[in-house]
Image (tube, rainbow, N blue to C red):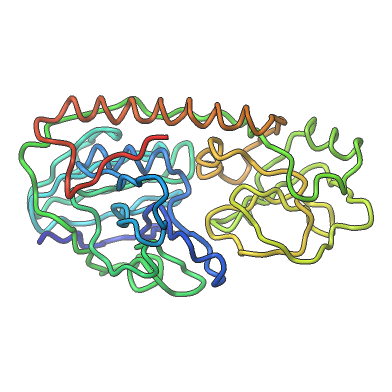
Length: 340
């Protein structure tokens, strides 16, 4: 089986998949990729796909999605030990193979001994490097995602380091073709629905939050995006009896600072949450970098579901175009793209 040897890892590169499910009650957050759409495209271009999930199936029993490398701000440099098919998507990170520029959002092939270098992000924050067959690391609670704070999953439960060797889960396939898709373009408008403590905030505070522009704080990470800007007061204070936290929850600290909670969030928390970012907009959060500005807009749950369906149709259409461009069956290892 082929390997990918890490020469330089970048500041925060980890092995991730679509996250672990069914573990919140045990205190484990889902982890997984921050930008789901770009990860799906990277895997599709590399010849992989998400597992198909039939209705009414226990999420603990579904097959794990293919694991890839999530790179933050600066990409990895690594050497292929065998002929390998791969793809890069996400942030605008210039890529070279053996010092020759190559394109992102395109199926690429490296020969044994080839050196791939993924550079500093010109725009965006996170890039995705997928290999045909995925990255072969042990499953932990049904996922290969890295949980750095707990030291589990991924490659030895930590970010990648110089000298690490990643085992790739399948050998090179010569018939994957040369597919490409258009890069995803995200805006900085985040749509929100009412959260569990919405009624604890007055009309003026709600209006101020929705009309204000916020800046991404340098203290942001995979746990959440801290937002610098207008402070939001909560009637009676923002401390509450701890309750569950879903992805995209907007938590208001005791100082009034908002924070958007993401993949590595805590499972419960004791601050009020007036809003939740809709699922369709969560991938945008994975591309926010310090200094970016963003705004919020309120939508109904029905509108949020419609937006999610429209976005998945768009992403699924891109994957189908990849399928049409390659000459072998897209159903690798029994996997299919999950459609909603």
